[in-house]
Length: 348
Length: 127
Image (cartoon, rainbow over all chains, first blue to last red; front, side, top):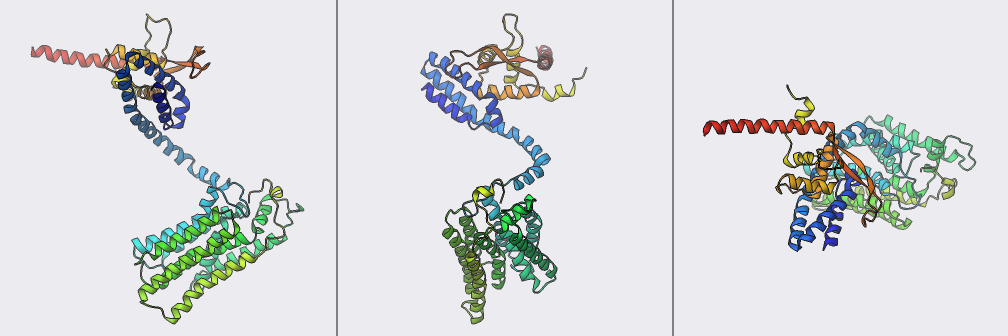
């Protein structure tokens, strides 16, 4: 009985704040054992009373101790928060080129889709606003992603999570450049992409002729081949959904938007956590197909049937990125791709 | 004379806190200066006539707070727990009232004396 109670007490100590536990846990177990010994000498009833007394008080104590840590945590966050975030973003673990990434990487890989997906849900369901290029939320979000994530991605040597960021920006720029004044932005990103591709092709990584480590990492990131490029193409999807639901004219009246966003996120999640190359590419194709077709069902529901123009438009919207994605998967890895040993400490 | 700011922010003490400080106050009958956790529990129970029974969690919550406020000092006892089957060989910790803690205890006692004196005065007038 005493051992059982002591075990339960030890277990509950695990719920204490770690700093406090490190400082007092040993002593507390020792003292509680003394308490149990004394109570046991007085009889079973006393042991029961003592246990109830202890375990009745413990949850309150634990809650108070955790609550006491909150102001300090807030103070520390306010003081060091930006530094922590910057450190977290710039200390990513190396990513396996064709393998499963860490959860930290996966979180970043899902970020672009989660941001635009979240805005899509909010705008169409909560605010009942139309999706589309006139909606400033998508523009602001894209600019923030471009300004916040892209520089970090470039500094990190274009890790896999940076590819959908580029895809999103290129997709947005290309689509909006047609009927807006963002052509300059589009040209800028296109030029930047061309420069990076040329740099990737020219960088002799094996010979070590380029001394700058950041340039080497950038080249290694760009030479990663089909899988990353396919993920980059998948980065177009959030804005394809914006276009698709814009074409539906009315704010989301069916669960289709939720289904689309779910499939988009699911595709990205399976891709980022998958070991298997075929499965990860299948996830991208599946995510693209199902999320776009959910948007088409909304159009079908609103129009009460399909018109020929709609059918052509829908198939075009689906087939164009699908073709790009399949082309990307057919590209062989860059000849300069590094082996695991060669990668060494390179964070790519 | 008015109390310093830090003192007025601590007073009044809660009953268990007061008894913990009192249990740590030097006692002429005791040879050693300072108490172990379990001894504090027993002393509090004895001083309060069995009315205040601290649980282990409550005791250490209070001790952590008192340490942070600088009212109590934590020292390593010279003896180690040789033969202790839970933590053999680990030095035990003892707690001792700090100078600051002593001032708080005195101030709290005076505060309570003033309360009792006021109450007695009123009760005498009534009777």
